[in-house]
Amino acid sequence: IAHLLLTRSALHAWFAHPALNPAYRREEDARLDYGSAAHDVLLEGGEKLAVLDFPDWRKKEAKAERDAARAAGKIPVLTHQAATIRAMAEAARAYLAAGELAGVMEGAHIEHAMFWTDGEIACKGRPDLITADRKLILDYKTTACAEPDAFLRAALANGYDVQGAFYQRGNAAT
Image 1: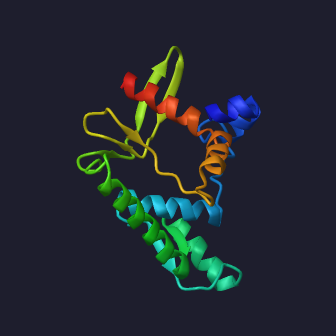
Image 2: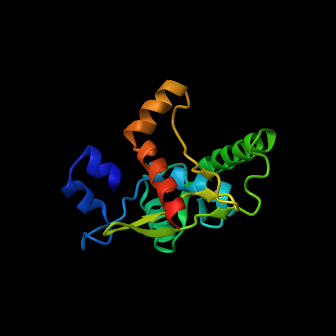
């Protein structure tokens, strides 16, 4: 929401906020499902994944099963996507295990909600991972292009810098 305030307008932020906008509806998009599914597999064991055996979402039956999975709180993905998503999570685990972040997930708080007030403003943050000692905050992101300059442009455009600062502020306040 802070990113929308900074880059768009107060009206855009209001429209995107589930507590302010009574007509708010979560955006549902296969692109978003892909990232959410990768996140779920890496950090939460893949319990929310609903793997559906269709080549795509074009047919009525595929759309109906996708919508039913969403209604049940699941993240719908196609069979061919599930293999890629699992490979992405395994690559991330291998990367973490091979470097200075080895063991970072052990005892960490996953999807830990933080609530605090900043002056009169009620704030909430929900980083992907905070280590048990609260010294490190990690957020898992998926991207279509990991080339460093392209990812940096996307990260700034999507407000990851604002998000990171916000999480640090929330961690210090809670």
